Each structure stands twice: as C-alpha cells, then as structure tokens.
Length: 132
Image 1 (tube, rainbow, N blue to C red):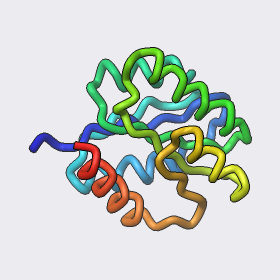
Image 2 (spheres, one colour):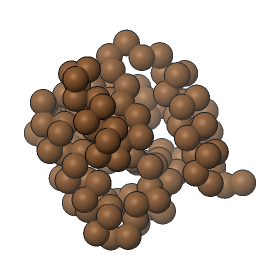
Image 3 (spheres, rainbow, N blue to C red):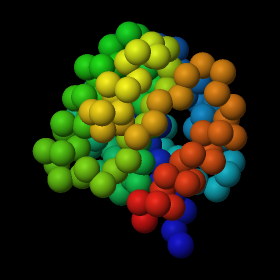
Image 4 (cartoon, one colour):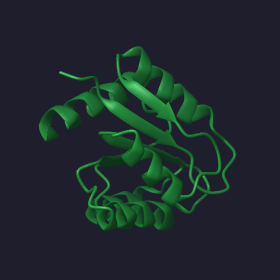
C-alpha cells in the first residue's frame, strides 16, 4: 500500500510554526510522505496543494484565533473541488467549546497543546486505514 500523503499547513497570518514542524517531522519519521506548505497560506493555496499532491489528509495548525473561519473555508473549498475525500484535522490554540462545532462542520479531529506526537501519528494512521 502506498504511504499516507499528508499536507501540513499554517493558514492565515499566524507566524508560529514550531508545532506544525514538530508534527510534520513525527509524521514523516513514521513513514508518511509529508508536504509542509510553510507560513501564511490561504485556504485556497492549501486546497490547491493537497489536490496537486494527491494528499490523503490535511493537517492545519491554527494559533491565531481564526480557526472557525479558516477550517470552514477549507472544507467549503474541498467540497467545491470535489475533494471531500481528503480528511481534515487540526491543532493549535482552539477553545474546547469550539471543538464540537468544528467536528460538526467536518473536521475529523482537533488536537490541543500538550498532545503527544505519537498520539497524532496513531490517529492519522487509524483515520486513513478507515477511509482507504
């Protein structure tokens, strides 16, 4: 079976990418093909990259407080491009009260600060095993 292809992205104006890089490295070290988009990406750029790279999953790191807008826009763009099969998850500074709302909107999983990298790797592996 082909390795999991994952896009890790930092949407918006947030310039703090240490967490995204740590997660990207952990996923890569577990055998996944990771495409890190870098800072200041728009949802359109992220979706374009995911489709061009034939990604299985997108992980967003959001620390700016714009998580509701950014995740919803990304999900809308995936639907418009007939790419709803790409699983979306995220992490960052996201209030507990917003997590169920994001999940209802279609985000598969939200990780909060302090999550172990192995827990993210395990979740991604299991999430993709179920969707493949």
